[in-house]
Amino acid sequence: MKIIVCGCGKIGEALVSALAAEGHIVTAIDRDAAVVTALANVEDVMGVCGNGADCALKCDGMSGPNKIHCLDKCYSY
Image 1: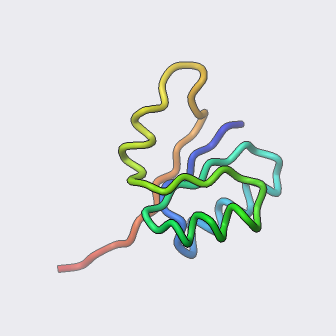
Image 2: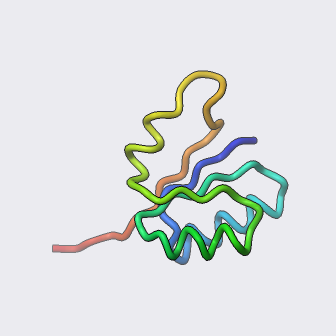
């Protein structure tokens, strides 16, 4: 299954690792280039530096992913 994970914090990184270990085709998207590079060097995934909302919206049709998981920081005001 093709899966995009937007946000590579602690939960996103764990999700990417688990999905890649299960044999899924995973793309990890994060705004921090260092995080994306480190994750792509450890796991068999494609890393994309950028805004997950912009990148995920560009995927369309059957050539796009089967699932998109968006994980971001929660802010309380």
